[in-house]
Image 1 (cartoon, rainbow, N blue to C red):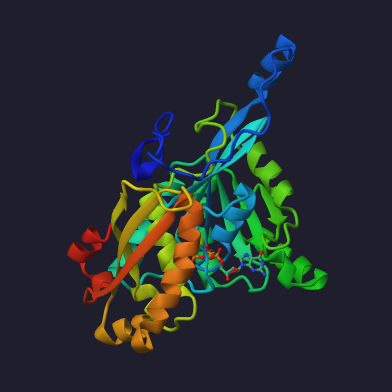
Image 2 (image 1 turned 90 degrees about the horizontal axis):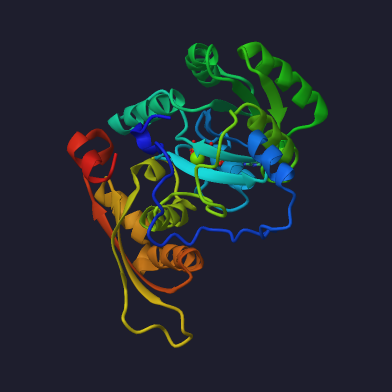
Amino acid sequence: MKGTNGLPEGAPEQPEHSRLRREASEPVRSSEPIEAVDERSEEHRSGFVCLVGRPNSGKSTLTNALVGTKVAITSSRPQTTRHVVRGIVHRPDAQLVLVDTPGLHRPRTLLGERLNDLVAGTLSEVDAVGFCLPADQRVGPGDRFIAGQLADIAARTPVVAVVTKADLVGRARMAEHLLAVADLGPWVDVVPVSAVTGYQTEVLTDVLVSHIPPGPAFYPDGELTDEPDQVMVAELVREAALEGVRDELPHSLAVVVEEMVERDQPSADGRPLIDVRVEMYVERDSQKAIVIGRGGSRLRDVGTRARTQIEALLGARVFLDLHVRVAKDWQRDSRQLGRLGF
Ligand SMILES: Nc1nc2c(ncn2[C@@H]2O[C@H](COP(=O)(O)OP(=O)(O)OP(=O)(O)O)[C@@H](O)[C@H]2O)c(=O)[nH]1
Ligand SMILES: [Mg+2]
């Protein structure tokens, strides 16, 4: 495993205060027969599986469903995911690291190009690939473009075609779609799933595990993502802000956490108290007005929604200080992209 794009070389560093951990449910029993332990460690598998697909094909929702908790934000707007998000599935026999990526698309801005490059780099480093194709949309030019890119990779890396959003179609349409998907490329498996109903999500995990190599766990038991809290917080604010905005605005929105400081005194209920200062960037003055809303009403709603989630994430009371700024045409400006972390 190479070290670029943030994929760890060995055991990754623990984020300083990530709360996204699940306590190990099964205590290790010392009376367990030694042979049984040996057998299990021999069979243990671990690896990285990258989820790719068009924007809005359900990659992040699927990542969250397989991990069992929210590690990636989702929305009905295309191009929600803008960086590589790792979510970890722990099983007694395997550790599967899902690598959620930005949707692949024909780029119209420098940001779009950078996101596509990020996906291409990630694809070359993983043990297997899950190619997501939504059941409610016919296989189209966007999917064929991605299939073409995956054809080269499929010679050395197993690619599983994942038919997402199975709950949205009937049997006949599904059968038709599965045939069209199977025709697209040399996939090792084709699996229909629904991240919303949970249909076949365990089957998909089994299939993906079967395509990763034997090896020890990369991440400590119970760790569900290696996203730093700062990044999760910025993403939760962006997710709240994406709700209800239309047209170009979702693409124009970027969020940066400027500061997260814990106060010396905890809150009255004993929880820590954290001040979080966040800058939201848009590309034009007209967009700034939309994000803020009449008399600041929209920004207040966004703040309330985001704060609830951030408090749950951090296990603390949060004072969320939101500002909106204009960074003119930042999606096309390499200097501004750099400043915003792209
Ligand atoms: N009905 C149904 N809707 C789904 C399912 N999975 C995802 N969706 C919806 O599809 C939309 C897109 O989901 P995302 O998970 O954000 O898609 P994505 O592929 O990560 O999108 P990008 O990050 O923009 O590339 C959201 O509105 C989800 O609620 C599913 O299994 N069933
Ligand atoms: Mg996504």
